[in-house]
Image (cartoon, rainbow, N blue to C red; front, side):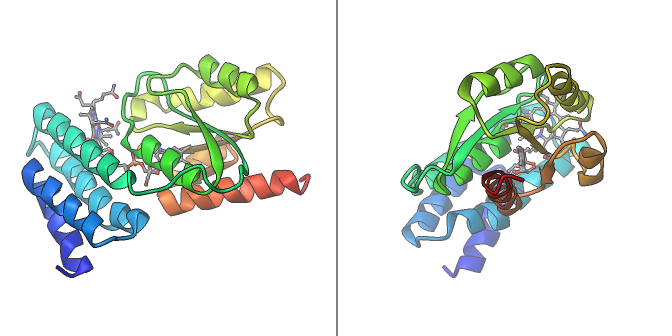
Length: 219
Ligand code: B12
């Protein structure tokens, strides 16, 4: 199968919630040695976002959403096993987590893996992580960047909480703070005083690398 055709088939298997087919196609993608980041952005992510739209429009319900989440998580981790992480020189430390009240972790885990493949050490504080835990863990691990994932509009105020707590503890200049996730818009992220936003994997990697470079340059 041609790569483009394969991506379309993966997208369709996700939309049809067909786990068996998705597993087959994922194996095929591995056999064809596809570029993992490209496959995720072009096949898996659009598929799962369409599932989100179907859910929003009332075409599918929570059980289907859970099924979709599980099957895509499994497929992506199979795909990710192909990536070699931690071989490049350590470029810096990135702490990542999903904000309190939010348990979505597919995007967070993908960002973690991609950063690790670029030589960045990732400390993952998991999902449903309180603001104070982000900051305590950042201090404890002496990280360069704190990254928070937020998929729900109801939990977006957690990001403001992190900024406020950083200021309160006089740590705002010690760490860069970046955010991502479906509930966040770039303009809003800027307006609350974050150091950056990324809407996809490529942007996330670019953002992290540029901030680490800036830090190294003493800016
Ligand atoms: C799968 C899914 C689930 C799964 C999650 C499984 C899992 N293990 O993660 C389950 C079933 C658990 C779930 C539950 C719920 N969900 Co849900 N879910 C989704 C869905 C369809 C896909 C999310 C996803 O994985 N996307 C794919 C990844 C790759 O994309 P991503 O997360 O955006 O990440 C990328 C970027 O945003 C960025 N990024 C992400 N994080 C970060 C962090 C940093 C630091 C950086 C730099 C970048 C970055 O890079 C990533 C890679 O490209 C979305 C739809 C959507 N449009 O997102 C709804 C969605 C997020 N869910 C929604 C809802 C409402 C819920 C529930 C409340 C449903 C319910 N009634 O129970 C619960 C909430 C549970 C909770 N407390 O968290 C709504 C949120 C609406 C809103 N505006 O608040 C959405 C938008 C669906 C919709 N359109 O209605 N969900």
